[in-house]
Image (cartoon, rainbow, N blue to C red; front, top):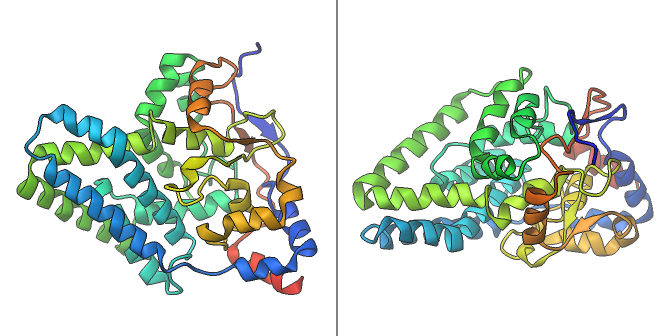
Length: 331
């Protein structure tokens, strides 16, 4: 084993644009998959309702029941809400940008920490500049990777507190204005909601909601999603991996990550159709089918560490939803 002491380096620009062009040229019918899914808002209302209801029912039980419920139920509801915020960030719920922003703020409510508005800002840069450290908040800090190293304990701690590590990264993105009126509104709404939960239901309900958030993106099989998406689990030449397992049902097909990066204007319900149409392009790529297996692989395989990511300085040409739509029309 050769221990990684730095990120894998690439002199190429982000890797998805070329495959997008090739697929569109071969399958112009993909234009029919581009659009929005307003029913996603009903998913948001359902999951928010579930989380508030469970917070209420757990308010008078022993605190450890809140932890168990958060791991077994809350993590899944919270992760689905995270995916819904992701859909809103791509304008894939409603045509109106303001409605998408408001929808993402509703989805953010039981997640306690305000993140919906800021996520939208830095996630767009992740698509356009994947691996460019000063623009891609999905890339870990170098000190973060060095601190965690490749030990099982270090990686477990990193996943357990992943929301905290993730919350620090946007400060690195100097070209993005992180604070504006919407950011403040997101913060104020979360303060009012959290105060309401504490006043009406008590501290145990808050424990449940916070634990649900941490498990949904942390030390839980669902947390393996962050390893699945861009960690180098299939050699150094494939930066993005998809997941084709059963958890795509509650996760709203978020596992179709290569497909999503290739066509970010296709809503979650159409990603399996995209894979089926362009299957010859995706079946040759490495992928995952089990988050539990991947979680254990990440924790116990010393060849995998937080350094197992590809970094670049080549920004290339910015890729956005408008450009993808133009390519589809031209095809």
